[in-house]
Length: 109
Length: 114
Image: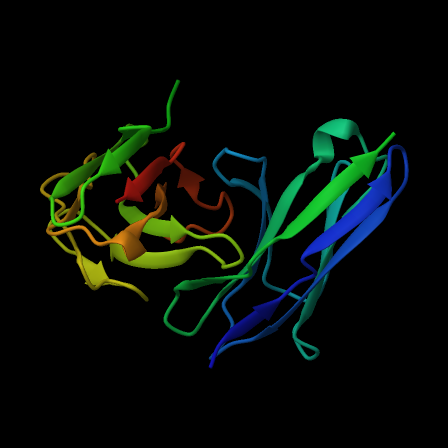
């Protein structure tokens, strides 16, 4: 079956750096996505990786290794507003998105 | 503001009753999707439409139906609601590939079936 694994919850300190990992096993690969979802709100798109390597977008970066079935989302200079769930999703061989259950990130002052 | 509008925001529905969740987008996206989100699970695709006039089944289509009469609207109908359909429902849309800009999601409909 298809599977996306990410930690259920993480805690970090304001101003610090946190890395959220995602491993996947899917039938085919056509890209990996990260979304942010604040409690009670809709997911919003953060990043897209289809080739190996690091994509940087301001305080957020996303890394992909297709050979290892692995990605991470790196958040720098954490702010309280970064408290949210972070969803990893992979587009499979049928171009359908398979979603992880999400990682709830708690930021402490 | 361009985006996706879902209605209603929340609803309590008696088991056995029917209901239509509405979804409208103004971005002229070709593809639209209906997901349900349950605690501890990833978003699960119910139905999708790659373009007006076509629809397809997702991972959990049973008990749901959709139509796509035009580009903007993609309603989801529950013919006879059951308690297991209690969930938060998100409508989303994307351009042709949905890659570089991702999916745009509506604000969701929280449905409770009692």
